[in-house]
Length: 155
Image (cartoon, rainbow, N blue to C red):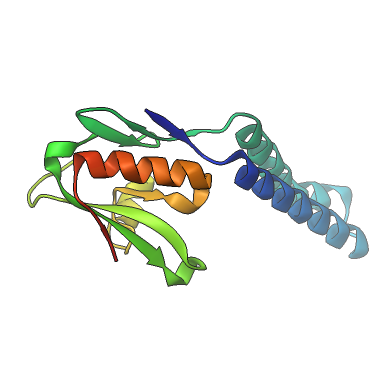
């Protein structure tokens, strides 16, 4: 079963990128910068707009769940036999957003992506699902699916 990022929330990211682009262009214009400097300043916001537009048009898969494992984004599949439990937490530092965090058995090691390595020492851990990035019905469906394979606790 596949779950995807919400197109509505990705559209919000696209709108934010357009605002950043217009602010950068406006600031460069008001300060009277040369065209070379303006190009450098506006390059990153243009890239932000292009990437966010692509993500909005072609939403990425957030998670794939099957009988043996769960694959989050592009990470290696996490085997259900290696999961002790999953916790649904609300992170107060990120505007009260819900996240599912997987607790693994001791001494279980998986190769991690750059972002997983970065998140490993945080509250999110290396394996977590941002429920806030999904539609409401998908949030309920993925929690039901996870609870079929491991214990899902609410913090």
